[in-house]
Image (cartoon, rainbow, N blue to C red; front, side, top):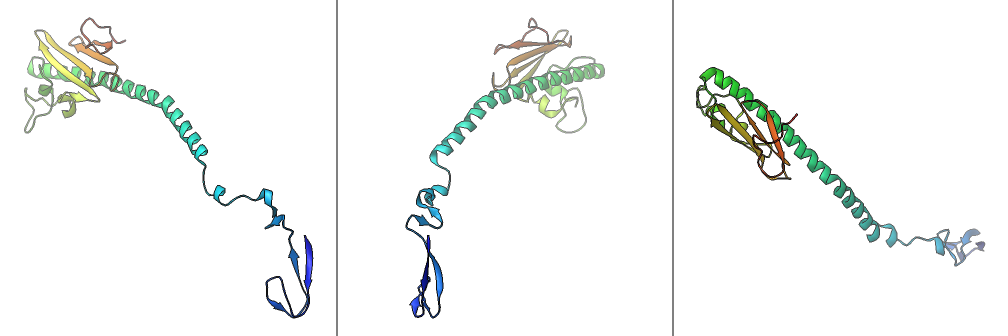
Length: 193
């Protein structure tokens, strides 16, 4: 780098005619914009991410999802199964109230549910919510049948290993039983403790 001076009636650094002395900086050919040519960053490389960087980020995100999704699904199924045990308890409470009001147990879920219109009666006692009385709630299908001395309740997942991993059974004894597997739970299935 050096200094160049121009005299009157000569061209200055900006290419304009100058009538006095001026100085301008002359850069050697190895320097452009104050940086050596080797240190310059091409404009195209500084505009965004490279393909390799994007692929690495996508691979990291997919790895995190592969680890997290099974845990999320297991947590959802566990929550559904816990909810089913609470809903079976709600049905037992409704059956106890139904028995005290009408002297018998209900033989269908609709008998415990709300009436379509008007006051509650033995055909629709309004003791459990409508969604439970319809027989489907939280990814499980509930069924109730009358027996000579009481009733049975079964709850099976709509999609095994999707909405639940267990099926449930209960009756007028209030004991809830479960079966780990796609087969429906029965009176001989293990008790939930």
